[in-house]
Image (spheres, helix red, strand yellow):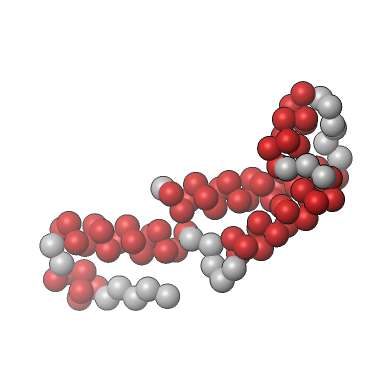
Length: 91
């Protein structure tokens, strides 16, 4: 865990302070202790079960070739969590 003391912040230039606060915010939003790996393993489990990549599943779902059942719904859930985590890490 990153520690940032108020006294250190006060002593920084405005540029360094902004960078330090941005780094702290990035660290707070990043997946913790293997959470990214856990998300990926959940998704890969559905890819194995359905014999499709996630992109293939999304394409077939959009085209109406497959319908959303409970398993597809759960798969979509894990994909959305992974997408949100990736977007937060890049923001």
